Image (cartoon, rainbow, N blue to C red):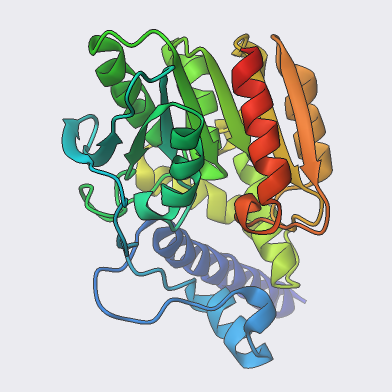
Length: 312
């Protein structure tokens, strides 16, 4: 009996250590882009069973996102010193109504925002497109899914404020939306209004969503991964909760959501919307997932944006 108990405890210890080793490696790869020329891991629905198993064991492979194109308008390249050095493109519009600062999502970069920037320019606004740390031409290869990026939002906001601009709007998609929310909540910036697309409700929920898309059980690995990811990157991942940040946001908000989103649930969006304190509007897009809303819904998206800006 004693021998069986000893073997059982050793087996449990082995499983515990193995799970933590896998989670540690997985968390690092999720929050650090590779700088070699290796191929990016395909989306879960395009992976074979063997590829899914490999990804679950060893993590995703994410090469550092690179800017693939440039604005068609004349633009100024700006380097700013935040908690990391970041690069931005500033596009000036004659007789501008204000300035919109645009922030990309996880695994992306500022060139992905060009078409959306074009729509804001058509509406009469200057735009500034931002590479978060680890992406594009900004410093390093680290991403913290909106946590430390919040400081970079403030840096950009302060830069435009110092130019004398009073009408500053912030636009962010996914991680960019989360970084905006955290910056307003924690660093007390006060934009004229914000437009946020598909922010997750909490870091834990977004980690669970990744496991669900791989058809893998979330317990206990999601929590272990979040623990190690936060520890590796210098923050407590369980406190990274945009649904809580929303309680400190009182400026006008346009919240956008794709009804087929597998990364962010409608419950998360509803909780964020409920917690927002100021003037707010929720607009949803049918047959749309966690993707660029402008591609499938250009007419509705531009109408939503135009109406929000003109009324605020």
